[in-house]
Every structure is written in structure tokens, then in C-alpha cells.
Length: 257
Ligand code: ADP
Ligand code: MG
Image 1 (cartoon, rainbow, N blue to C red):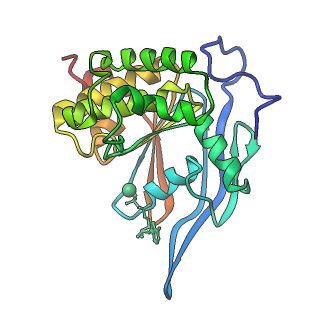
Image 2 (tube, rainbow, N blue to C red):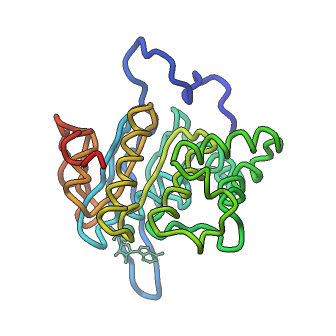
């Protein structure tokens, strides 16, 4: 699926009208069938996210946060419901089309970094761009810019195993943003980091948000959730609470160091 009639949404252009809705879930359900057990991981989820929003998703373990992120990231398909991405329904795409949309429009940041151990930092960031069929010169430019952005240019030739967890997550953020995706999805991005490295990664996410990225983040940490512009709470696969943070992007919650 290619975007043909939609306005360019990746640039930093002036917003003149109402902020466009970038993605919308309507009545999303997800049921997992294993042996004789039916697990209702998501039930009747309605959610709209606007361009430039920073949404936090919180909730207890097993409440459906990762499932929701997997659907938003086109890693999984809903059992029922409608998912509009940039106004186009994507819930019924073929696996190949889903992979294409995912690669072009979604950036992922995982709790466990998920870098490929026998590729260099540079190659890790480059790989999704290669899958996309991007020319080598353009790839090089994008990878260098992305590593610069996360302060990891000086480690481009290192292997992931030679980096600290915090540094690996910065590389994972570079990989996620190198393709200039419509949406960044992060599943407990600080979950495997100590508080200092966690704060550094959150600072990076805040900078991305301030520069216009649309960010959806699962977190266990209420202090980090408060940095987002809006928080939705999941419980038993349903959105049970929703709150806006007037002080979203709260500068005070993160030390500048
Ligand atoms: P969270 O990320 O909030 O901890 P998950 O989205 O991982 O929650 O899981 C929600 C529910 O769906 C849980 O009950 C979990 O056991 C179940 N679940 C998740 N993935 C699968 C799967 N692939 N097969 C079966 N059940 C699953
Ligand atoms: Mg999870």
C-alpha cells in the first residue's frame, strides 16, 4: 500500500488546520486461541492518535499493552475491528503489504534493544533501510544522521556487545528513526536500563517528540508516563482510563544531566 493522496506527514511543515489523526482504532478486539483456552487480550479498544502526540500506555502486566502495540505496529492483526493508519484501513492487508507498510512507516524500540549481535552499530541502523530498497548513498546519509541524533556516531564501527545497555538502546532509537517513520512505538524502552540510562533514553524520546515525532510508549514508570501528552490505562484488555498531562513534556521530571 502506498500513500498517494495523503499529505506528506513526515516533514516539519507548519500545521494550519486541525492536527490530523494519524491512526485510529475502532472496536479493536484480539483473541488468542491456545489449546482450549481463549484469551481476550484486547476488547473493544477505541483509540485515536494525532500527529505529533506523545501517548503513554500503562497498565498491569497482562493487560494487553504489548498486544496493542503489536497491532499498532502491524506486527499482528486484530481479531475484529478497524485500524486506520493515515486514514487508510490496514487491518486486512496481506502479510506482504503489512510488512511493507510497517517497514516504511513504523519505527520500533523494544525493551531488550533487539540489535543484531554480529552486525556493527552502523549496519544495524542501516538494515531496515536496505530492506526498503534504499540506495547505498542515501542509506549512509540517513544512518549517519540518525547516529548523530542519538550521540552514537563515535561508536558506528562497534559491535552491540561492546556497548552498554543505555548505548544499545540509543542505537535502537537511531534504527527506529533513521527511516523517518510516521510513528515511533516503544515497548518499555527503559525496562532493562538503570535509572540513569533510562533517563537518558527518555530525554532522547522527549527530544524526538519536540522535533515533531509521533510517539506511542508503553511504560511501567508513572514519572515517565507523565512526560507524555496523554496517558491511556489498560486493564484486562480495555481502556479504563485516559488522562492528558497539562505538564506533558514536563521539563522538571528529567534532570538535564
Ligand atoms: P502486557 O504487555 O500488558 O503485559 P500482553 O499484551 O503481553 O500484556 O498480553 C495480554 C494477554 O494476552 C495476556 O493474558 C497474555 O498472556 C496473552 N497473550 C499475549 N500474547 C499471546 C500469544 N501469542 N498467545 C496467547 N496468549 C497471548
Ligand atoms: Mg508487555
